[in-house]
Image: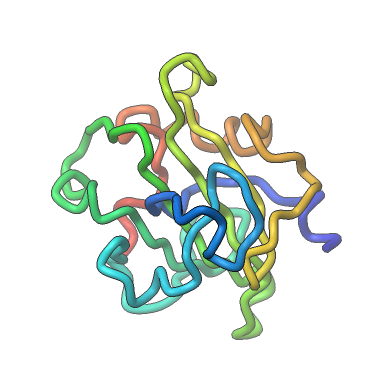
Length: 159
């Protein structure tokens, strides 16, 4: 878990939050999602596999809520509340996932200066990591601020 203290969220992984009464088998929280996101019609990815972007997360693959599929090709857009991004990342490029960076679009007023995004770091099994504490994580906000035109989603151009 030492990688958490050195991480900056740069580009995000989006997905729709799981509201199944806790039946997902994963920790609670706004960014909770079902373990089958890779094969679920609720998510999509534009990437054939993990690629190296500008992220401090190393190689990654991003999954987005299907509700924004028609938006991500645009040079600017805003996403609806409830949109989620899930970024699988491999920080040392050894072929093994090191964790998941999750973004969840909250109701207006959560963090209006930064698009009302809630950030979470999760283990590979989906467990919520306590460090950094979920929410408007300063290091995540700092990286995503440069992508305000795409509603703070920094990885939508990755293929």
